Length: 357
Length: 207
Image 1 (tube, rainbow over the protein chains, first blue to last red):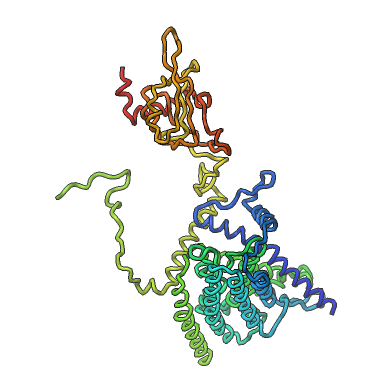
Image 2 (cartoon, each protein chain N blue to C red; image 1 turned 180 degrees about the horizontal axis):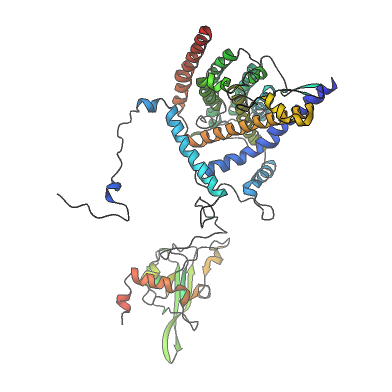
């Protein structure tokens, strides 16, 4: 009982620490620096402490100080309660959804069975979708409660876009669920031990559909019409400043991490290394005794999982800085007329193949 | 009409300089309407730039600090081309007097009315000569057009290559008296030669 409690708390601390302590601040730097390198620029590198610049990493610190000391402004006529509530609603789902994503397999350490997922729910993937849709409320509330026309337009666009893409995103996953016949993310992950059983080989169309819909759900370019700077100032967070403004950004960055985690788990073999099974790792680390071998395997698996996550973060950043923004009608057309039928056809063909086999 | 295509522009043969075909029809082909291949193509281009620049940051190419051409401004500075028009300065002879004879041409040509001169006379090497008693240049009005330099018959005013620290928080400090404007002949030699060339001033100065 006590061991389980300690294990759960340790896992929560680990995921929370990695997400809030590493990914969220570092992604702000990555976004600036990667866009700069892609566009033949240098990027932010001016903040320094005693002349040490550390390739612009100190901008994270400078930003934090700036944001924390800025005035927290609530516009006149705004609904103060909802105006304050909105950033929390959009940040929390991004934090919570990582609870069901497994970042490693199951290991026997000192006679105790360690399952590297915070909450091993039977409905894992449904939980993610349920909470991801809650983020819509944060956006819509932010747009509505700001008492600003631009914010209102952004909120309306966000609600339309996010609801439309939710449908296609849900349907794009059905194929994967049918193939692995499980909603449990740990089981889906465990079934991808063999390289050619990875989701990308079984569901390539599903992967592309899910990636597209996930980026649209996250409201990043090329689907960033809710915040479209050139059209409606900053969209739904026009009237936000200081920490509340940053909470929207943190939510966005965390969602990038979560999307990468889901993609890794569903399509790219979760914590498995291609052509290297866990049995092989255990026999290689046999010199450290059974417990030591298990711990080393666990660490290798966690590292593999996060390397894959980092790759998909890079991919999403590349997409964001390569493609220009879609027009509003194009987004609606893409969501309803292309992605939704494609998802349905994908489900139909998957079903046929499963039936024939 | 026929003529031989045997000349080149630079080192590139003319055949290669033919204009690229411009697609006037906006109708997309089927391949482009599939969308995914074109997106992948675009991402390959940006990824290529990313990889090349990352490699350029870590292993800089020969003789450079990095592959990206950005100049880190306060630490690194570009060499200013000779045609650059910076802060206008008065040319100072080696004995510390100014070449200016206070004829007032620059004062009257100045489109921004930035120059004001009070002329006078003095004795130099047993000859009487005119000189500016005060020569005031209002840098808050100067538009850096270079007309004063073009019109000056004595090559006494020149646009230098200085462009830094010209902004002030107080307008009074932007009014430059004669003492702040004087710069020695040696430093301005290149610019004066250049001005002579472009405005054909040696026609007037030929001996």
